[in-house]
Length: 64
Image (cartoon, rainbow, N blue to C red; front, side, top):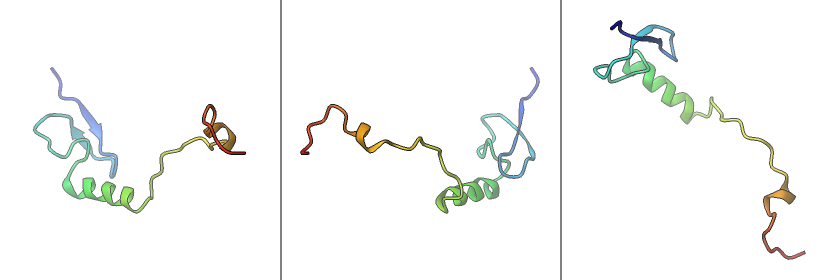
């Protein structure tokens, strides 16, 4: 069976997708830590829909 390879999300290098590769999907600890740092510095964001404040409390009792 051929070895599956993927692109490192940080640098694009080809990486073997195997249990022995402790950094997968990254090619190295350096790329793994660079990605972690980007998340910690809020360079990546997960998109979320804007909430309608009135719909956030549907069904809840609230004072008017």
